Length: 329
Image (cartoon, rainbow, N blue to C red; front, side):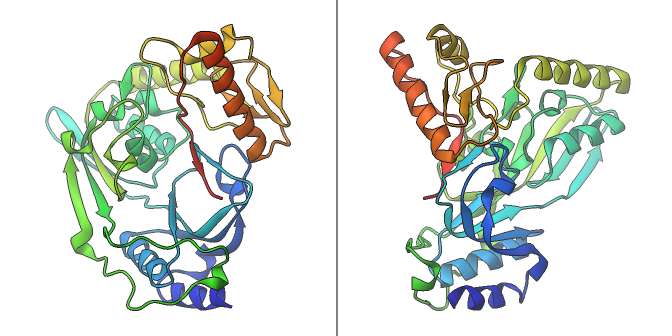
């Protein structure tokens, strides 16, 4: 079987304990739904990431990059090829006179970083302390809350630029693939650093959503603050989240905010709060969230998304856009 050959090659650089065959993606997403990935690999550094991509290119397998899985929905038929879970956990603080420069790996969870910054008396990151994602995902989607976004604190981001001619061909079965040599020539020369402007931040989007870049690490510029004030603000914001947001599995806000309307308000006014298809439901607590009530399939969620978009357009003339990324077959 080709899958055994691929795994044997991967283990030359990556520990076999971090290589999974036919792995359920529902274990890696906050929606708790989705089919299996042909292969899932957890990578700890850039060397492992580049090697995994080279092997994928050699076997003409598509690559899907994930972080904490908190803003994605995986279809029920799963994901063809190799899913790479970024687990870069490096964190470094350079304390300068008036501010701190924080360098953080793409796999670091926002909540973990927020706690570290609190302990160091560094402010400006409180807004992200309750967001259940990683730095890589937060930069990619320009995550934000309570009036602050990543674009306001990011100085620069180091990323891996995939080869323009590296376009794996999708196959129906992993054993149908044809081996090609020598595979991708991706190396350290593909690592580039983009300043804030070059990242083209906009509402819940950035250059990383449009181009073949993988976020590796980000530098943040943050002011100092009083630890008690930072802690109080984090607790206040997290309390607000718990009061307003559902505690059932979801991927956060399902839809983007409109230019001239609040999407959750429109959905509520259309009488859709609590509406369900299968195990998927428009949250009764916050109409901007679609939740998994316990036995939802990915198709239930997709069908409900489509229904909500259709009803809102028919009743208001407004087109609402999806914030969650849908992956898979």
